Image (tube, rainbow, N blue to C red; front, top):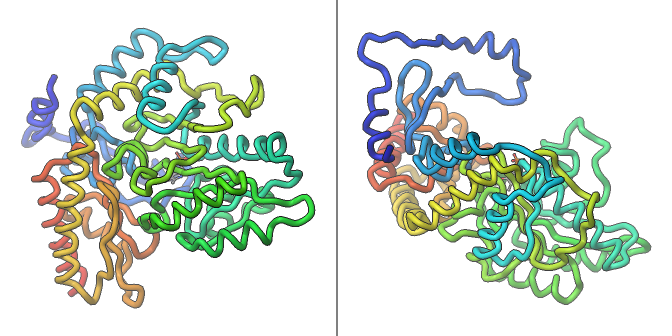
Length: 427
Ligand SMILES: *Cc1c(COP(=O)(O)O)cnc(C)c1O
């Protein structure tokens, strides 16, 4: 079935007068599931393209895409085909054996990036965890550092495992989970002096900086693009000192920025980089890529039961090939321009409420004034009423991360909804 016919069929998910087949209760959900999220009172049941429907049959334009994950939107024929094919053929074995789909996906990534070798896991946090372990082994075995330190940025986000909340330069994610993992140091983002002094000051006794772990564009931290001069200098410093340069591409990578990898915007290549969110178009997969030091890990030193199984790799490969075949990066660039232009026009209408619009491709943020009451979450709630799904990136930034297949008309609809919401909430 083509995407077009799926979309047409999906326009009226419920016949007039029909009842919802499976009434949904938030109370029974909350009684059964741990409250690790502040959930909006919305239960989504089905999707097609950039649209989703709740259990009441109400339609929404999805500018969250599972938080920058559903690259090809919902129910894309290429994904439906790959999922069906792979589950019928073979879905899971073990890394005790060769998995052809895993090899093919790794080859695709290598052909389309600076990577020389890939390790597969199941999430962004795990990919970063693998990078942290690799950096430590590199420090001990190649650099002869007894107590390696990994430098990360303030306002960064690297995941929710113990090591990755420690890497994350935001105390709110670390509170109550101490003792944290030793060996991390934080510096302000886009501030080269801070990195230089960290590297010289932390060179004491057995301690030394072994790696810098950083996002090319900070996603959760407020959609903040990296500065080209800063990243070029980081590359030089790492080349001079042997410090590993590790990019967390979990959110910005896989085409979201309008280029396949965020680092392409900065004109520098990392030694190691990680991917997850968009890589499988919404099926759980993570990956760590290395350009150098590909043989640091020896058999038995790192592993994952599910990592790189035939199912996720077969589907992720279909997502990658579709990105390429349908020239989706060009759509990301054009729709991103259109979105930012529209948001900037809106920002001019509300100068007392909006400070800035920024982003790359289809990862964009609209920042609210710090000294007003209004938060990004307030706008997200009002937008739900208007049929538009958005997600905050911190308290004051509204994030726009639609599927990469979003159309010109859908961007216009979203812009109208944002304008409508702002005219209501700013009154
Ligand atoms: C989402 C995210 C992670 C964590 O990914 P999970 O799949 O939730 O573990 C790590 N780094 C960045 C930059 C992210 O955006």
